Amino acid sequence: MSQEQYRELTVAAVVLGIIQGIILNVAFVYAALKLGFSIGGSTVAAIMGYAILRGVMRKGTMVENNINQTIASGMNTAGTGIVFTVPALFLLQASQAAQGNDSLQFSFLPLAIAGIAGAILGVVVIIPLRKQMIELDRLRFPSGVATATIIRAGSTGLDKAILLGAGVLISVIWKLLLESGWLNSPTMVANWGFGIQSEELHFGFGIIPDYCAPVVYLSLMNMAAGMLAGRGGIPFFLGGAIAWWVISPATVGLGWAPATEQGITLIGGQMLRPIGIGVIIGGALMGVVMSIPAIRAAFATLASATKTAGVGGRRSDEMSMWTIAWGTGAAILLFFLASRMTEGVTTGQAIISAIVGTLWLGLAALIVAQATGLTDISPMSGMALISVTLMMFLLNKNVAAAMVVGVAVCVAIGQGADMMQDLKTGFMIGARPIKQQIVQFATTWIGAIIALVVVYVLWAGGEGDQNGFGPGTALPAPQGGALMGILEAVSQGDVPLGKYVAGSAIGAVLGAAPLSGMGVLVGLAMYLPFSITLGYGLGCFTQMIVQRIKGSTFCEEKLVPLAAGLIVGEALTGVILTAIKIYSNK
Image (cartoon, rainbow, N blue to C red; front, top):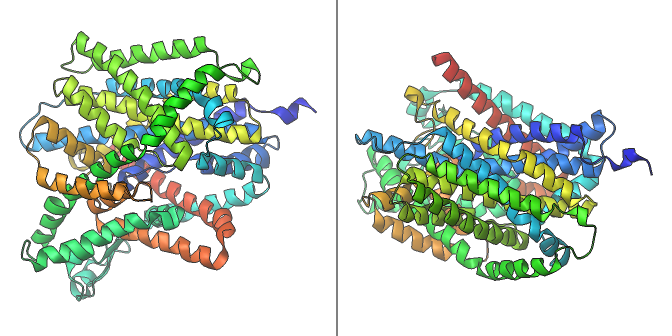
């Protein structure tokens, strides 16, 4: 066969992967700040990879497209680790500043170095386990299998790319139309209880009381995320429905809050939000507990991997242990530097942070990779909460220093899980693991930097160049709010512990349910404005109806790429508009 048929690690694949990785990273950081969870980028990258490498360049192969999606999804996942942690620092700093306390100080560089260290260590931890988990244990890694199916589909890739592009165009036009204010009808809303105001459709008609939140957010990205989730996203919708259609009316009915705008603010801010944070915490920690079988299996896998290293296959199909050792050393050094550069951290504390953080990071990445291989659900939230809490105690309640470790751990465990999914894809289509490992090492750290820049930009898009996300804004940042609650609880103690504990108990029960991740989903829904949750739920029901009428194949071939385009289009438009606003103000 000709050399052309074996195109794999090419300049075209690397460049395309990096470009897609940047685009997806920016888009999904925005989406995660709005929805509280991220969306994998492998599907979008694989679809566009086929369209460009094969459709435009007429040269692409399956394994070349796999390199493209490996880079893109790795960079996107590194951004997830940032967006789940760093916003908590901004929110906590703003909260303390409002109280006249300016003690919390943090800077870009230590967080960036921590993100790079996490990206490297996440890859390092996984490489020795690939053969055992994928080739011998044959773990499922459902997302990796799905991506391999898309890459194998070949000829359908161009049709999907067209649908994805159509989704982007529709979403951009709709977002610009909403931002223009042309659809706003505040007078109708005030007089008739129906109309559009602040990108939300009000449908109370003067009959449904405001404390039942008769409002839906007109975000195509929001509904598209629901369409991708389908039946699996229903718990998220139910969490919001219980909060605003059961708890809120009961609170007013019992006289605990007045049926006024002030009462609605009280219900959302002082009742549902802290309970929601508690549910997130309880659900996330129960997710770790429920992963105990995976933890045992992970240790067994680690033991088996040491025995099977070098058995079968060519030695050159894996990166050498020397490379892994050098990578580990470099990442630990970066970990130390990031900690030492943080205000208030001594050299001794930085050493403790680097050693303990690396050990915990390795264990957490191993657990998450195993859990992802078995269920496709990653207990990232729980691991992040445990990491930050542990380091708060070890570093004398230094919030910024604890978050440096939290950033590294979150980036690493996300990277480890994503890399295993990508290696599963490569295994199924005949790719060489060493080439995927090389590009992961070389490129994925870029995602952490891009995500950090986007978070800074979005924060500066608010009034006075701050408060661009958080409660009461278009980007609620629920994961950051939950983590901020933990930081406040540990550092100050002045928090609604009763509501946190009650919510944690509910979250733990939900987290033990057969449907993985239910506790976190319900908690996020209680924390978010119901207009977002309702729009997401409408997307879920839309997918279920379409699937019932047209079948699952139609959904996979048509609905998924269209929905992915709707998400990317709105998110990119939102980030660009924010950047334009900042530039215009200056």
